[in-house]
Amino acid sequence: MSDKHYYVNLYFSSKQMRCQAPCQVSCLAPFLEIPLIRKIHSYKTLTMTIILLIFSNIFMTFAWYGHLKYKSSPLFKVIIISWLIAFFEYCLQVPANRIGSYSFSTAQLKVIQEVITLIVFCAFSVLYLKEDFKWNTLIGFLFMVGAVFFVFKD
View 1 (cartoon, rainbow, N blue to C red):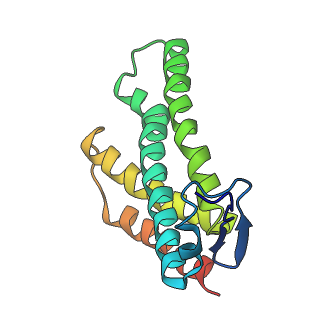
View 2: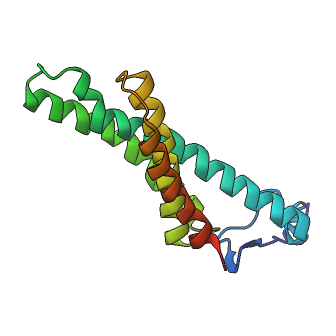
């Protein structure tokens, strides 16, 4: 086996990142230079970012609003439980932002996160809190989703 190591140049949008360590599978490293492989790798980044953001938003929605179903619980107890839930949210949110930062600007990451938050919150309020979903709420959310178009427009 050769001692030669391939270093991988990963391209995400307009950013270039050079790995600090040699590629573990050195024979596959040159294939990451192929544009199609780079694009597939970028889709994996997008997919992983979105999955982590979805789960982090589920945790955070429960941390922020889950206690509203138990209004008779002592506030101090609710705060402690909410912080414990939020810890797991941070364990997902921080990696999602780190991974996503290789493909997206921070503004794009924030808009993706907000759209996911709206979707998770809508499902949570209807399914968990048993609140009605009104037409004017939908219109307001659609305006916010419209921000996605402008933030991702070059």
